[in-house]
Length: 281
Image (cartoon, rainbow, N blue to C red; front, side, top):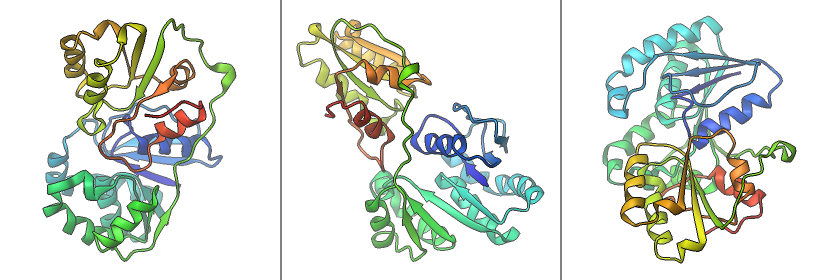
């Protein structure tokens, strides 16, 4: 089994790859186009990187021929019969090389692209239509994503819906986190689409002296969000944990889960909050 990803940073697609790898008994080859690696993978996984650096989206597109050349050198060594990819740029590489090398390409679409790209669909829409119609099959984690691909992007390739996998955490290994106040929690990458900014603003309007907000995650907006918490005079009641490998201990010690994303496919964190029977706002 070969999985192809843009990277293994902090995201739902990356989390799915980790769950799949850790629950497959066979050997798995994970090829990351960049060295953005945050998740730990099992001993059955061979992890390879194409570039030992991270690049912004526009630069990756400009470097597409170089990515294809390097990735082809890696793939031909394994003579794959099929490759499964999990990110838009990885999907394009997968589809192109499947035609060149001669294997079956299965791509995963995990975001509601119609809304995610917005006005950028002026040029994204024909790209998705052209490439995705050349894949052997598409796997979505939500029915609305499938319907959008068919209706909006005019995809005729076979599309299957497979909701996110969830592995129950070991309750015996959960840390007991001290808590003296009513605790709200949000989990996610600190980027614009997660809209953590509105959570901080809402928290500032309640009686926050008798409660606290835990923000689990890292991302490009960390500094801005901390400054906003200071400006709103709530910084002493907000806990920024940064990246953690154990969000379950925080969920287990919280009272309410707050979800504010502007755009999602099928969010893993909602499943995890439901497992801990948290109200979700």
